[in-house]
Image 1 (cartoon, rainbow, N blue to C red):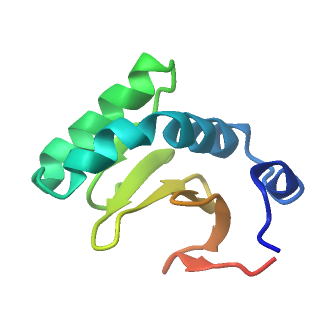
Image 2 (image 1 turned 120 degrees about the vertical axis):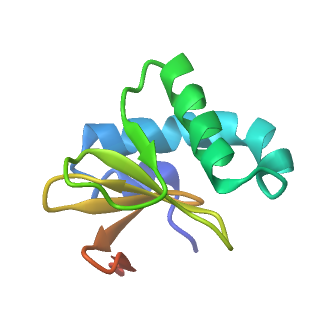
Length: 108
């Protein structure tokens, strides 16, 4: 059986990762319909706006930057990665811890 969001609380020690994942899960449906049509920069801007409307202040970028926290947008398939200091979490399409720098999933 696949882990639920509530069962994932056991391994997520970042309130920000959990908050971003919940906001995206609740709001991404409106963006997914047009995500493939948007250029990458426009998609990043739309995700940033979506998070800001939910009072989540995190930079959204297409490339890694030097100052975490930031949300890294990967395309084909769409995958959103929250990068913190020394940790990373996939926050879309599912919440999962990652192993930086290559952002490989950590099996739980």
